[in-house]
Length: 112
Length: 116
Image 1 (cartoon, rainbow over the protein chains, first blue to last red):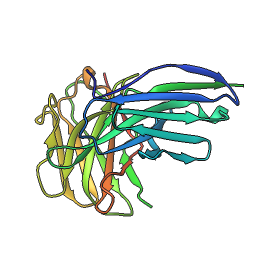
Image 2: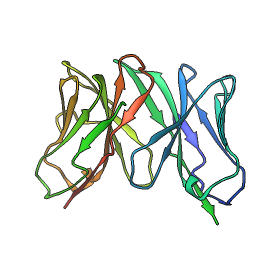
Image 3: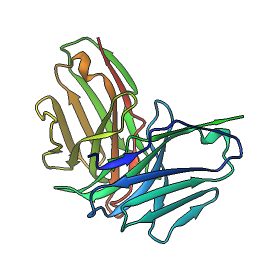
């Protein structure tokens, strides 16, 4: 079983739509959680951290359920520029440092 | 702030040659740097964790003699792919953490390696 699992998509939605991505993680010792965005052939960029209380940043809302080991990202009023791959990322303690474990990503295509 | 520079951005080499990739933290000191590899349509996979002044910690399945990592200063880590083969062709990305915010990694722009 993968440590971080995501639906690969693609999600093909019209502009203005609301879209939700889900993610599950297997290691209950995971300490912190993030959503990253990766454009084609580019490095991943931090979109937002995810907290148990839920957090919002503009059109983006992230939720964490530690009991279910489940993370979500909601994007409202989708823009064409939101088209990218969204990576669910979990931070856990490794042998010598914290390390990030990446999901395989969910691809989003926003059409005009 | 927290800019990570990675060089080169793209390299093409012949099979059997070695390729060195540099990762620099431009405006901060990075005690820890990470090296990832990403194959097409797959996720980033951590290869190794590099702490300044000590040997890198490699993930399971990553050959330390093939992927040489040097982290000689607080602002520079290098990854050398030795005797590269076509199956080593991939997108290699480095990241670095600030001492004060260990959970946050700042990524370089990546190096696309093509081995002919």
